[in-house]
Length: 87
Image 1 (cartoon, rainbow, N blue to C red):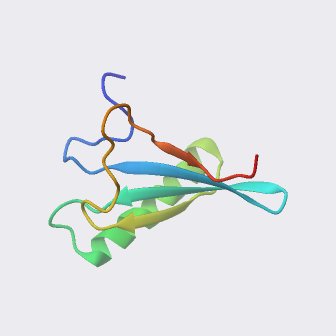
Image 2: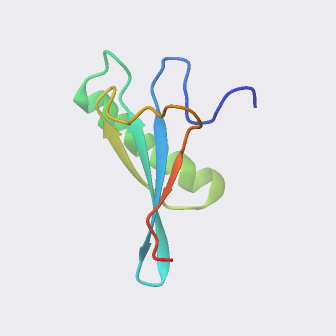
């Protein structure tokens, strides 16, 4: 892949958040809403994305659609996965 998986051509960002929930890990995908997309469009896209991830790789994820610019841009090396599981 020529570019990071977390950056789209429209400049929107995604991050992955991993945390422990009882004996299973939980994965949340944070996705920026495309500029010009309304709240309903963003939520519909989030639902579709969660379904596609489940269909393609068999993993259930929570998708949170945030405002454009709502995901922090990194300076230097990008950190795309935030692991909040206890060490």
